[in-house]
Image (cartoon, rainbow, N blue to C red; front, side, top):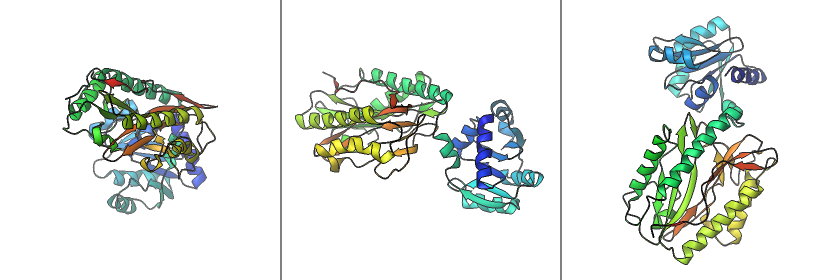
Length: 356
């Protein structure tokens, strides 16, 4: 964490600022290591403080190397103001996307420093994963892979989507996950045409596609994979949809590399889907960054100018969703390497026909 503190200080110097307050949960955890739910980080050019209440003092002292742990008894921003006076900081950067207006007012009332709103400073630092982060992410992905292997023996006609979702969640927790990374998607039949079709009471029928989008939240990091399976023999139209998505995803995994923009990466898969006549049914971006949050930078989308670099972790998830017919999405987690990418998730992708 010491290196991360210094990295933040370097960014502050570039902004001409003396201090920054960090209280968004993901950024707070990234820079301090704190896993609790209440506290704020204050970093100046000389000191690093972790400010929390009596419930978390002992935890913060154990988890936050390089930080002076400070207890607040009234407002966290009041205590912050006291510390800033001692530090003689003239400019305080705060996370404008996380601080409420009430919080901003409290900062104003408790410090004479100039308040400077900023967005994306920590998120930019978090784009490149360390080897330690990659190791944890791989474990989170491995749990999801094992969950998929498990669920394929559970799925059969008549089982409800919500039961499949719950079984995935329970399995991942048994394997060491704290929870799922997000609300699990289990969408069958015509509901598979809903990109975010969270699990319902619908019973899965023979001849339907079932899309499963899930991930494990493990040691603070998120995995996120999607597999679409057939339950019983699907009709030819659904097989065609599956094949188009499958081919586009393989093509993207083969071609995505550092130096590409998010838009160029997106186009690899999108161009194939368009050529096959399904372009209007692929309405979301190809992927997103993955780490402490399940959706973070960089984005793989037609509008993304972000250049991909080694160490970035992204999802690759093309999909085709035809209303009243059905849909398919296939998603893997990959890390950018020096000359290409490495796929972290290993679950099979060829069309599986279950429940026969």
